[in-house]
Length: 326
Image (cartoon, rainbow, N blue to C red):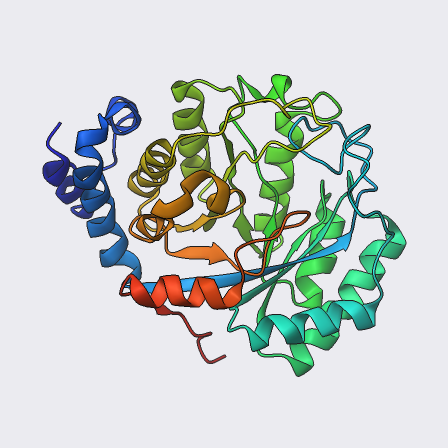
């Protein structure tokens, strides 16, 4: 495969084929830098050298009754996860202010749940209204499955983007979760977009899926016209069904990020959960295909820290994106 030719083809408006996407994942490690160069050419064209920082707020922890195999907050999972009910409006607003202090352009409030209760939705909407008045930051929420009315309320309150990951391919999804369906997730993404919110939708790689499943996920996200794609790498959690799965190699993680960039050239590609423990010393190379990252940790696991993230971005020759004026 001529990786330069592939990147120029994409920049000219042609779409990568499924066979080409699989070739990215199958590339030998001696081709890794060439693959990353091709992905970077596309990233640079659409997103420049900016890195968009996002901060997560675990607004309701360890209380989920779904059985997602990767999740330490799911039914019967690791008991060491902190458990608490919905945070208050004041706590959520304070989290937004802290995220802004860390140069985040997005603040994402997340609840471990099948979907929001009426009271939880009221709390989120009130927090969003206060944040939009006081804090110059865009708001994302991740509240599980949504119906059209719930999506409308969130959009009217001021939520800019809604996160709901497909997690994996349609074919592999039953191996990951049985308490809701892949179609339930697709319907939520469509409801969010229909209400006027952007869609943040990605998945987790390294759960035992085949290379075909990773490509299927990338193409499904392209078909849904998802604006933002978080790419998570499984960090096996104690007590979960996937606790003993071997982590991906750094090279495989980088090929995955490159493939998602080439399939979805204009989308925001975020190197998300598991980046530190899977990419290890090769983390900076993730910024060549990805133009976004979480900082200050994840829902139940810590990251390497905000100052380390800033230093990594700076040392790699990238800049932290600023929120565009309203």
